[in-house]
Length: 290
Image (cartoon, rainbow, N blue to C red):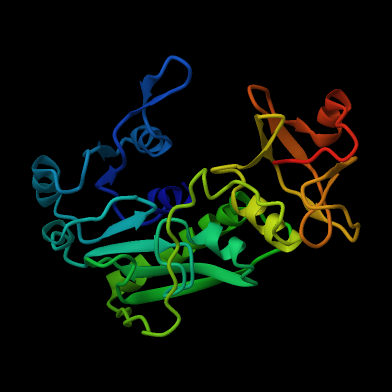
């Protein structure tokens, strides 16, 4: 929510905020508002919650509000062209990659999965294509060796908020014109699913490490043992050699060298340190994750 906070604290007038409809949450599955809605309402700002941006009531209200520009952060739905055309300066999206790299729903996770050393955030004008619009500005961020997707996204959200505000300032002053993205360097970042998050212990340690960090906190990396699912927190590559998948103390073998387990989440239980889990588990000699 850093971008919303930055806009609310700026000289720009926030006439309304668009977010997802209230969704079921918790054990009782009661409807709860999004954090964005709660923050906007606390600031006294009108909140629009269309099921889809093509809803006629939403587009009609947006025309009544007549915004100069619509900044967007992680909205998660494609905005149809008639709605894109409503604001004078269009919709300006903050995307967490250095476009045209990692267009799509999960740019931060894919940057980690593929071992990028450098990533960043980009502001661009939305158009009909998926993250294909012309670019206003970028900010860069070094990827740290132990970054999870949560760690990296937190830093990008903070630096990206400043970029988004600077972009809106530049548009308002008439100083910024978007530049088309290059044709080279395009890569795609589709959503990472729970199926994708299963660890393959026959992969090299570097691949296992990247997968677990990319899937932390969501969707959560996992494996199975004794027919039950075990969630995995970040692991630490080592120089030890253990057969692939075999549990040797807090080490687990891969195709190259072993990784050291950090936190685990046994099926039906809360997350805990791997050492505590292993003391209760008492794995047999040579026992392996599936």
